Image 1 (cartoon, helix red, strand yellow):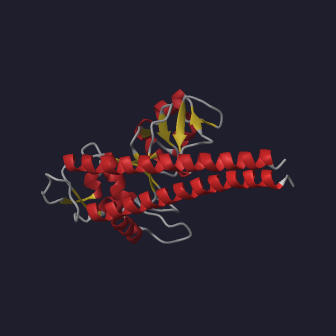
Image 2: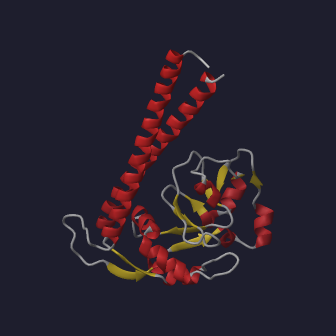
Image 3: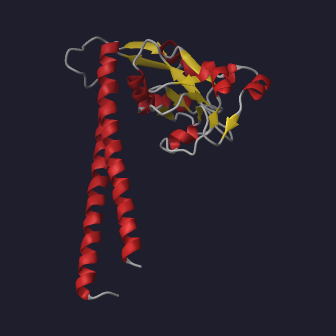
Length: 250
């Protein structure tokens, strides 16, 4: 035990850390609540951007996403086995798995070489593409970030993509409560629930014109960036506190 004066200084320091951590946790919670409120009001069309009044068009997801594909769409199991090598050490391209998205895109990564990447031409990934889980945790969707290497899809995930709509808007639509409920109803129960591509494509939705999609997608992207920024700050504060705890109490 140090002197009472030193105890007070140490206690005051960690009290300040705890206050900052609590403040940032509250900011993150409030931003997430704000996003959920906007999701509900915008996708129910209760809230619209100024200048937009046209009714949203009803359609099936198969009309919205002209690409719904996965790893095995590139060839037979034998051809994939013969042409695609995977590596746990750094190589030409990332093979993106659902666990990479769940791990906040921090690795550890799975790689393939240039030959494997070229062979997997039907499942190449680009920034702002959407991947989904169709087995187990059905209805989980992730927006692909801009990483530092070419990317292609690993097994057990599905790429959904639109050439006519705004992917940022579509991603927010897919994670909303209404769409999640529709997906759950289409999922086949079992040891691991799943949804097949045919049933997925038949799910109905409503979408606005592309200009309105872009505004909605940009709004939610800004909110997501703000949430991520505060989360990074929170993580840094927690690491700093742990570092001070370790150094001061030895």
